[in-house]
Image (cartoon, rainbow, N blue to C red; front, side):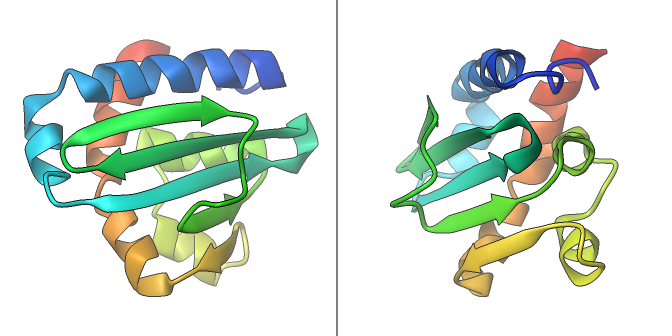
Length: 126
């Protein structure tokens, strides 16, 4: 769970994940018509990080949790599970491991991006 020990290490890791995703041509095609965003809020670290998906590009911003399409609130181990692909967002939601704010349909769309996110994340933490 490297990168989930502090707010600063989380932001650094997420910035690197976003940079890798920005270079992934398959991911760019996947989000070619996207116009949505997702904030990950980790209260234990007093951290929040937003990813913006728009027309084939991705941008990340630390410290931002408002004004996003979806907001996911969870502990660090759950975020690590989501990012690594070891935990399904749907099962985490229905088991109460994470809280979701926003449209569930759009959340499912963003959940479809997790396999790309996991590829980028795992390349950085393993």
